[in-house]
Image (tube, rainbow, N blue to C red; front, side, top):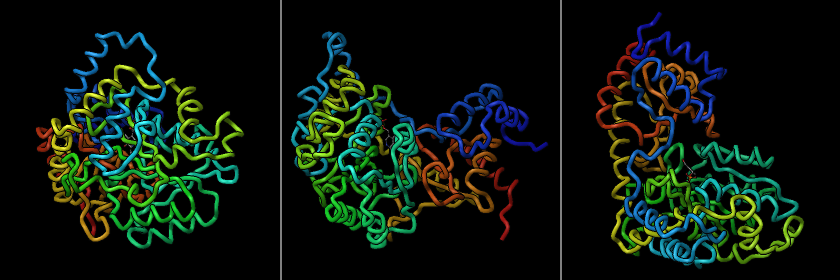
Length: 440
Ligand SMILES: Cc1ncc(COP(=O)(O)O)c(C=O)c1O
């Protein structure tokens, strides 16, 4: 029996009880439940890095706007499916001020979390061309997007971008797109799980490929403005959030409120469709919908049957947040910088104890410190490392479930760990390192 920071027997029995055959392959929510159970049984606290929950309080201005709207009685009234007018205008203003792009308020809408925006988009994009049936994921990526494809019975292909950075990305994308079966491409930037950020050259390549093969680009900006190597916090002033929008007019942006504004609980996100795509007609849509215009079908053919719009009071919350952000009264980037500061310290604690950062470069530049980072330990696969580290009171997810081909890797989320836990993290990693000496 090994002596480990968390009672070996308890961890072992809870893993067995969970019924999960391979912990390292379990979903984020399954791991969360298992750790809740181990914590309860052992009375000890884990360093919890499995789930991307915001570790900060919700944007106050949003809470106030929402309460005020509720007091005025909006809870009784169905919201417009395409979103309330003031919110649509603020979203349009937000992308103008922080991305320097022009999108009409009509093409900007709230969704029930960015998750609904992607679900709705997958539904339509898989139907715009009868001879194209596949989404391409530039991975690693957020596992739930693939789960959405599975429940919708939609096809997808994926590749890990690790070995295809810079100019190499062009040939790699072309190898899929030239076959003619891809209707759209999805990636997140900054990337969940690896925190790589595409360089301007890479975004340009993606844009060029979109134009050449007439493919829609879905850019998931769940971590908007959070590449802290540059300051994207000033409305109307460069630098702007890097984006493919500068290179193609065939795009959908998913901008989550969950992390940038710590508003995950109210399930509200933004979907911004380029005016070109919104207004475009796709005759093949007529197979499923009365209307073949993309934007019209998105609103009345898709969001309507999915949820009939987004929570009325949450729309007022987001309107208040965006208004304050757009007017320069609320610096949301400054608030979330804490994640980057914690990542910097945590990465050092990991690497001082024999761990390695897996995704570590954006072409020739070290990646930013942010919401996530990835690590490995010599001699372990990510799946086995994840399970072994549970005995040391450290939880995360393996990169295996993210489409990564770096099978040695683990994703750590920096949001929930408190600075007061850094000493514990160091002690636990030191013991792990001592118990698992690295062979040369
Ligand atoms: C890349 C990515 N996309 C989408 C989401 C979900 O966003 P929302 O909470 O707005 O549905 C997340 C949340 O972790 C994410 O990391």
